[in-house]
Image (cartoon, rainbow over all chains, first blue to last red; front, top):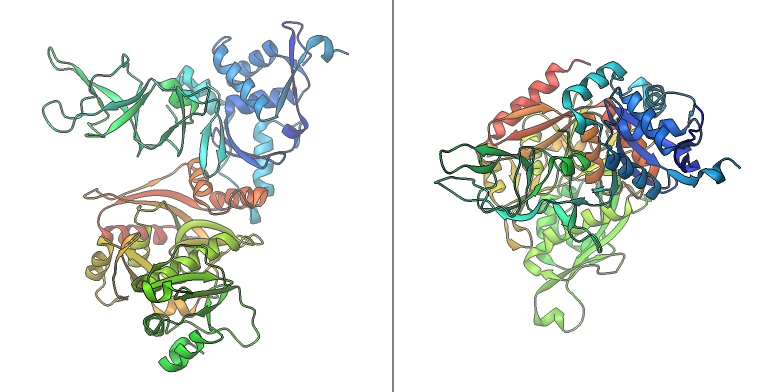
Length: 106
Length: 165
Length: 305
């Protein structure tokens, strides 16, 4: 998966995301974040967003498209405001960061 | 973290490493089953869930908007359990939430709420339309919460708090 | 040696002097008191509990005594102390006994962080334990009392003490405080149950303490493997329902009800995940104790490990 040229914002996974401890039951993920000692509850959508970023920096558009494909739903089914909510929350938790594309390609 | 593995594989291996003596979590649902459930449950099933355990409660991230912060539920007949004079239009899918489950978010999001305890079947009820000629009305489930003030959340808000649709 | 081996005078002398040693499960206590009414009750209700062996370390030095100074004479009050400090406002002297019991709960909840402490009742039979995580008012103490008088061993009515090294549940078979209507419910359910005097108008209403059956106390050093989580809820006139609960929901309910989940960080996460993974999880709604006990008996019989 290569970084998409669409959009100027690139998402990356942080080291904190790399040290998460996961426990999955069905489509609910209990996740322990060592960097903050917090326990989170994610669903498939959130987990797949993080999964996508394990492969390297991706544009917002690419992450959203990849997540929709992994969920088995059509393009656009993951509503823009829902996706923005997830990204914003994951940034607040310190699990993802966003970069300007020009910085990401340096 | 095993970054090259799929979520399923990560979860499975984590389950093995967590448990003693192979008392692992139930068998991981296939991706096809998960996809099938999402198709059945509709668009809300793909809405992301991000909750955090804080001080003994689940915090819904970013504070969720509430449709109606407080509305009275009629106690007793006639029209027992009627949601009285809702200040916003009610639609199928909205949910009544019992008093005390929600708390006001800090400024500047004071018009929003977060859960102080998990929303579940014992403290919430989907609204039900009562089709009575000339005098339709809504109730909280099977006429629950009579005599109480409840909050009304949209289905989207409830989904963001982790309650399965 | 047990408390009952001491005469009332000997017990009162120890309480008023260097302290009465008492063993409650994994904890050794030293209790001091200058209240004759407390001494009398302690001799009665603590009778089967063992005294620690000579030389064993004491975990909590607690006391229930008259306050110092003029208040000692003006108002009849009792102060709970831990290591000589009084963390709480005084109680009326008539509530000295429940005050000490609540104080001991506080000591465990705030200090025993070498264990994961679930806010949960627990019972055991054939080496397998049911844990009942519940919020106040859900009826776990009443249900627990009914079960231990129906062939189950008491692990605890308040603390699910999980040992991090192996996930085993440690017993803490202390007196069970019943409140308000529950007292009469248990009197009717098991007239032979040993229930102490009722303390009226406490901060939690009317309270009376049930002494566990002797076997529960005698086996206070036997841990048990958790096998089921049952989340109870007493609802007046409700039909009995015992329904499987999703493990993700069970995890959240256990974690949010634990006393020290956030203190133990990743250890707590791992332990709760392990526990929930290895236990069958149910929600229980009931209004009739006999039905609830029968349902849990059947649950344990039906699960053939």
